[in-house]
Amino acid sequence: MRKTFLLFLLLVLPWVGSSAQPRVSDKELVSVIWAMGQMFPDGFTLSLDSLRQPTKGLAVSYLATQNSFDKKSLPAVIKHARAHDNLVGGWYDPEEGKYYFDSSRIFPEDSLAAALAFARENQQHTVYDLAKGINIKSNYEQEDVRIILDCDMGSSTDDLFALMMLYRYMDMQRCRLLGVIVDRMGKANADIVDAMNLYYGYPDIPIGLETKGVENPPVWIPYHNLAYARTIDSELMFRRSIGDQGHYMESYKLYRKLLSEQPDHSVKIASIGFVTSLARLLESGPDEYSPLSGVELVRRKVKTIYAMGGVFGKAVEPDYNFLQAIDFSLKFFELLPKEVDIVFSPGEVGDPLDYRPEQVIADLSWTDCHPIKWTYQFLNCDTGQKMWDPQAVINAVEGDDLYKLSPRGWVTLTPAGETLFTLDPKGNARYQYPGDPVWCDLVLKYIRLMAIQH
Ligand SMILES: [Ca+2]
Image 1 (cartoon, rainbow, N blue to C red):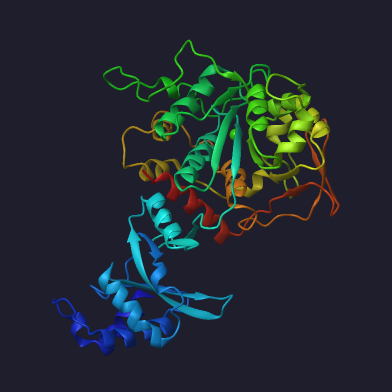
Image 2 (spheres, rainbow, N blue to C red):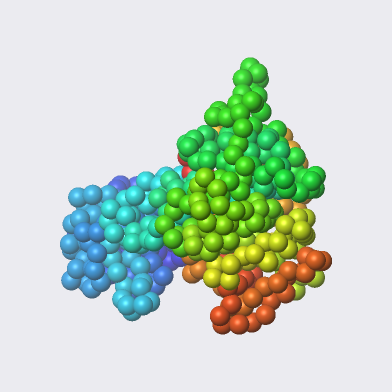
């Protein structure tokens, strides 16, 4: 693409090949930019300084040049760009059938929050990552997203990435993380979340810990000591707010407290571990936080549960998350109110998203002190670990547009851990379909983009 563009410039602008800075009049630029609109039907960004297309960074359009789609509008776009960032972008809107031109600004790729804040100020719905070729939604005109994360921190590292993404979504003002439930027993696992909260700058997010859950579930990657990592000077590597003697709230109690404080039908739960704490919440009775039973509280406050789990496609093995805690899982399926939607993310959706350990470490090369990097430096993370859990979190925050979902139906769980789906337009359950290679590439790039923010 770039080669074609340079060829074009060499044909119409002989001075581009010289070492001197090209000096192009605004009138000539109108012709160049109009021609680029024809040459790059999917879009382009042009630096008016170098007459090159930048290849990195996050491009955002200015509000001032909105609705410029014909040749007559180009002088005003160029004038604005000259007075601001010397960047002009073009993009095609298939809905309107028009090709728009904008004066643009480019932010460094690791400054997503700043780029999105600028996008919101300028009433733009997206930011475009030039290097990765992906659009990132701004929260301009976005619904209020309230989330509780329920994870089995301390085994697979995809829980760490799912939590990391929620902090980044908060940096981007895309959601509110109300609290984190740790359904894998053991204080060390909750201490990991405490260290993550402080590392990412959200020390006040409450943490609940399961104390009557699954006994000794398998551990794939033993990063439970993450919160106690030390520097070569023997100092704690990661700050903490809860000390060794501190206690976490019982997880179902924290659920009750958080839900009782929220507007009706407003809460999304991303369940990326065992459903032990959810089952105990559903079995709970009135308490100091709410006069409602657990079932009534969930019926009234929860909008949708996004659950990593379920087997609906080609795979034949029963689901891991549900089977590990089968008694709790059966109770959860029995008591979940039928009015609450549930979206399953089967393992086969995350299976193709292979965030290789060496790529993780390279993406976190901006620092030596990072909880996820520590895990990847000191433990073997090449265990077949895939980006399963982020699928529930991304779906919860981004909404359903990014995922292809099954029609509605009901899901029942068998004691063998099988999830049986029955089609019914009135059903509360849907499940994600696996994406094609283009979709998988896009989602993995999105997770990586979040990882490099700082
Ligand atoms: Ca998990």
